Image 1 (tube, rainbow, N blue to C red):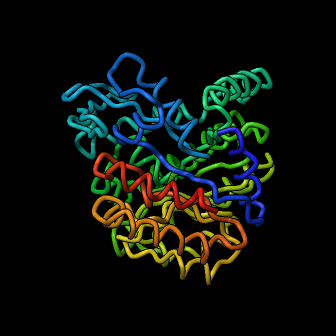
Image 2: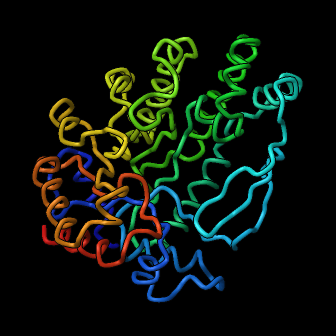
Length: 353
């Protein structure tokens, strides 16, 4: 939307804008078709998604096109994925045993360590690409700078998995730490390539490190891995480039939120109520944090009434966005289980001011 960049900028600066900006991910056929003006029928789904963002959101970080049911693909590490319309999973891991990882990782670490420095020409090419994509979004903000913490990249980029990572840490701690440091350097290069504040003055750190009600690992393990230092380096790199940083993790992360704030994060996403996160308590404790997301998409948006959605939307705006620093949206993404009527009730209440 034409006014989106200004609304996002005002909100993130701690000023309540004319209306609260909407930040979300769309994975919903009915919502996408409504705002795109045409269905997702396989002919130009990315074009339809761009139209839906342009007319329905102020900011997003990822456009996911639907897949053919049962389709398969392989990633650059050799993992095979099976796809359903809005989701996918690893159906065949390239490395299944601990020994496979121990043999493979030294070569991968060497590859990461030998990656070339980012040149001005590379930065210029990424800037041009972002500008062209943002033009397709009609003024809505696309967050292209999305560095990942080393832990997140190991688990969900390489698809190492919790079990294998735990065994690797027990048997090969030096190898794990060298791998993490190599990933961190690669992510700093990602920031150099993609941090262009004239296109989007926000970055999002990918770092899913929690389940419902608890962390994936103890705080002591996070410290041993250098996790908080990793977050601090990412924040510093983004801040140098003129970007504010939103930390993304599903699940319950209250036990390490003070560490993340100390590391320099400017905001938090998606603030998953069903996992135990309390948006209002976070606002009371951290009045300067940008809160992105927060509207319960586990229970309220799929199963509530439009009136209930409106009431919670209004409460969020009034109680957590009175001084800006609120990018309102779902507590993960708008999936296909969210009725169009509920999403429109949410959006209408936001536009009511």
